[in-house]
Image 1 (cartoon, one colour):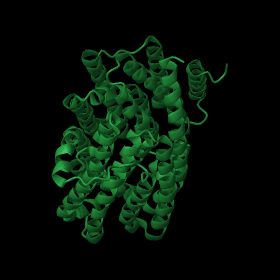
Image 2 (cartoon, one colour):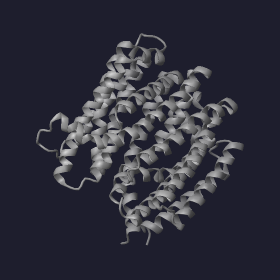
Image 3 (cartoon, rainbow, N blue to C red):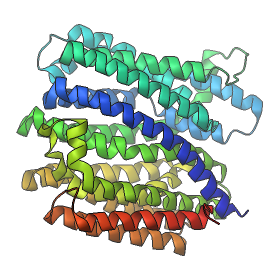
Image 4 (cartoon, rainbow, N blue to C red):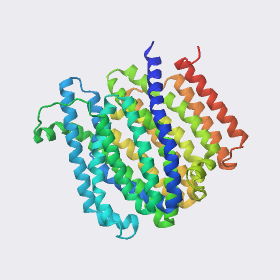
Length: 481
């Protein structure tokens, strides 16, 4: 078996495992989202989005990017003893960053309370939310260690357990307490994630030797330096999203903010689960081939192919079923989301091309180049979203997503070619071009004809994409011999 075929097989197998967990997560989330939409409405959904954004900014600042940078450091560790020592150091840094997050939230608690709820009635709950950062930091670091160790089945178990438990918690709290159940849900959900991550990672071996606090700081600094650059990018990304949300809330209404939140949930949350499933295996595996140019390029090409062959049929399916799906997941009040989807769904196809290339500079350890790549995308997103929403309404937000991935994708490819001798194979380019043609046609019909379960052109395009994906996957994986 050649390396090219083995990459396809490994990628597809692990994506399938993660995909199974994502399907279960989506299934149980259908229930919790429906309950949230009914009992919280667009206003409540908007509050959740704003609160998530603020928490994300604090975590990006105080987390120092260790959850991401530690994956690379563990993946390239060569000696068992040094790996065990490194993991223990990472665990201790998790506590440090968690406490930092809690302190920052306590300092800004009054501002956060008023910004989210427009009153101080929930101040005590916001203060209690400081626990969120401690539990979240520990959970995310332990999950990062499992990812670096390529413990795919364990991570899948974690996602399934969390999805089911959190759905039950969300339904219970939103049904009985409505908007007052939002913060208790945040606190309860992160505690559950902490418990599951701790239990599932308990067999990961760490050194039994005591490590002085000074050594923890010194030996963790290379990881922190990489993480800080990554966290700066994450901070700017969160701030950009906050600016968009603030603009929608202040210039329009919190209901429009709720519509924007739902579009992000479906485009980034649901379709993004495919990318999340792949990254759990792709990123640490790519680190292993840092010094082998051919295998490195093959893995990026193979990942791009699998991403497109899985994503494109799903995107086209959403051009058919989105009205039904939004009514199922939420309520008819969220139908304006379709205006964002016209171009937002096509943007996801572009993301499938851009996303694997974006890892290259990170794996190669070029922190500032990786930072600039992300910075470009974030700036395009916020500027285009605000300007195009002002000019075109919700449809402009979808166009902004499309422009973000198009421009940043061209730049990312230029960087990969110039600095790392990357190139797409001929067969990969054929899949990219075919996918973009399908995306162009279906988004054009979405713009002029709209979304409909009975649109014959979209149905034909869906069937073509499914047949094409099966044919291409079979060429690489030999389902049918």
